[in-house]
Length: 284
Image (cartoon, rainbow, N blue to C red):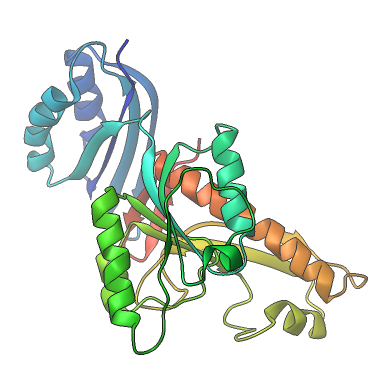
């Protein structure tokens, strides 16, 4: 039985794109399983995601044939297997709650990913307090003086493992502009959503001192603009006057891991398309 495929595309909006794409698949005997589309009025661009069963037509044959249509509409497009796990590097510092959650969801079959490496700027006994099985662990220390060499090592690990995504699971080192550019569109970060209001250390304590009533988390692509990359997923949690700083930290950890896991799931499902400084996210 053939695996289902996913076609994603974006181009300048024009009439007839949906008809041409669906006709293309029909003419080659493909069965559409799910189709979503969106026209952004601001950028006047068209976005589409189609999951389909090729029913005997190979993905290479489809790519070769679709290239002509893609060129006609000046599309950015790709056809990939929906079932193949995406190869992922997970980076972590000392707080491993997001890492633990990703590994748990992987074991439960919720995430279509294959962790090919875990990278930390701390030794394993400091960074991780859970069983990571046979996933390769790399201790890559980072100082101001060694940062270029450390980042080069991360790029080498990504190259050696064929990683398609880098997940900063509370990795507390800032990427250089060079590193951000190298992993553009394939590196996801998670942070609390107090920024820019409560910068620096102990943000949850700062938020408590100000009596906040909502806390949240944001998962976004990494860019040279710190914590300002295109947003993939966000969520919030209500806070009451009875919550102390420890309650905010506990609730913050929970929402951070939920938001990051959802962002990874969406990326692995080819549901996130770039739209300038924003994203188009096809839910499902």
